Each structure stands twice: as C-alpha cells, then as structure tokens.
Length: 102
Image (cartoon, rainbow, N blue to C red):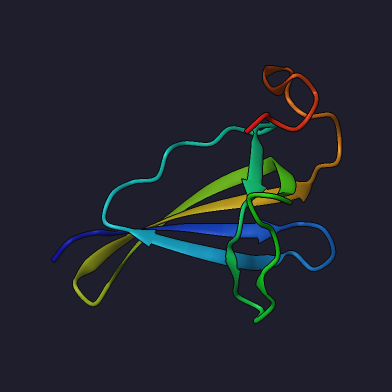
C-alpha cells in the first residue's frame, strides 16, 4: 500500500487548531520559518468553506514546522504540520510591493 503524506495547516492566531489538511502520495515541499504561505482558497476544516481567494489571499508566515510519522491500517502516514501566523506586512520585493500585474 502506498504511503500517505499529509500537510496539516494550523493557524496560531486565536485557537491553535488545524484549519486545513492536504493529502498526497508524494512528499510536500519543505517550508522554512519566516517563509510566506498564502491561502488562495483552502477548504476550511471548521466548515467556513473557502476564506481566501486568488484575488484576495489570506497571507501568513510560517511560524514553526513539525513532522509526525506513524503506521495506520498497513500504511505509513507522514504528517507535516505547519503553524502559520497572520501576516499583513508589505508584499515581497519580488512583486514590487504592490499587487502583481496580470
């Protein structure tokens, strides 16, 4: 049976709880503390639906990461937990501190 990779996104503002989960048969790209991580339309676990969108992303910074590995039903589950904190600072200099031109 294939391994399962889960990216578990936690928002550390307010209640520190998972807000979105993504599953894959392949590992997720590594993230680093301080890196930008934006919500362009995640389905929220709390039933709120999609909060961010490509036009109005909800912006975050990676606060911390954690890895958890366990076996379940004959599969190895690799969880990559990412704690995010809200970000409202300037856009990246790569975007010229303004919205990208479409």
